[in-house]
Amino acid sequence: MPDIAEIERDPRWLPHTVDMPGRRMQFVRITREVFSQPPFLADFKPAGAEGAAWLSFDQVKAMQPHTGPLHFIFHSAFCRSTLLVRALETEGVSAGLAEPGIIARLAEAGEGAASLVKPVCDLLSRPWGQGEAVFVKPTNHANMLIPALLEARPDARAVLMTNGLAPFLRSVSKRGLMGRRWGRQLYLEMMGYAGIDLGMDAREQFSMTDLQAATVGWFLSQRLFASLLQGSHGERLRVLDGDRFDLDRADTLEAVYDLAGLDVEPVTIEAVVDGPRFRSHAKLGGDFTKGEGDGGENAASPIVEEEIVQMHQWIGAVAQQAGLKVPLAQTLF
Figure 1 (cartoon, rainbow, N blue to C red):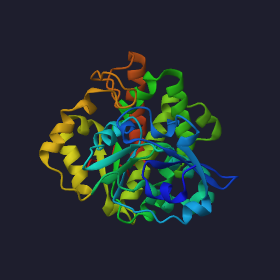
Figure 2 (tube, rainbow, N blue to C red):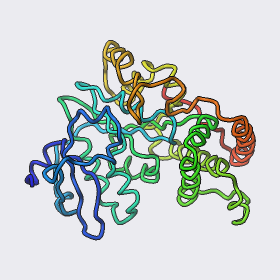
Figure 3 (cartoon, rainbow, N blue to C red):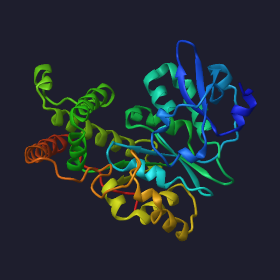
Figure 4 (tube, rainbow, N blue to C red):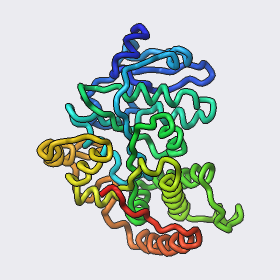
């Protein structure tokens, strides 16, 4: 096992998960080459025992790593956020971390892990190269942790990435049974910490269709982001539409770097846009076919398309009653 000083110093030792009953945190040793490739960092498995180490919470809290600039890509799911963070993985400029498992684990642990948020943020911010910043894209299932992450790092800036309801629901639908189950889980999750009174009793809520439940989850994500924009950290946040990103890739990267206070040469950005990141599937790898990205632009069946239209009308009425215009307007550029 490496000594604590090595784990503290080397960004390749990434905080990965926690054992709450045992009050310890696991670190895994990871190379930079995996950042631009699937799967998510949460799914990373070290090759052998020497690639993992456990430290107590007290040891983690006592660390004083050399920190660097840290910024976030928060998202509402299926909006090309994975593609964005992989595009931000550019040696000499910034490192892009796609869904490190540790943030999801801290969110699941709740208040019991509150004291670990800042130490983890500091560890994630360790520069991978001279003068580089780190961009972290957590899973959307950890969005309840956004205020704590921003509080832990007052220097951090964040993109709130989303898209319209139709591409979101098409992405849910095309994933079949598991996608529809995911939509219901999102509904339950969002209602648990960012809920709204829909004027429906328990029986009516149980009778919702899968896409109707997913629609509520999407709307509550919009509502959460709107509340963050109006809160104490609002000046540090910008909204990005995932479909606009796909149309204006270079402008998006330039705007994200500007938000983070990084001066990046246009030729560097153009090299990324013209490079392999935008020619392979951000989540699955392999060749990318237009229409098969996070946005799920391929048309669904006529029946699904009809329900999507109905959901758009229904949630539009709900949003109007809540005084919210959805989806949120882009403010990044």
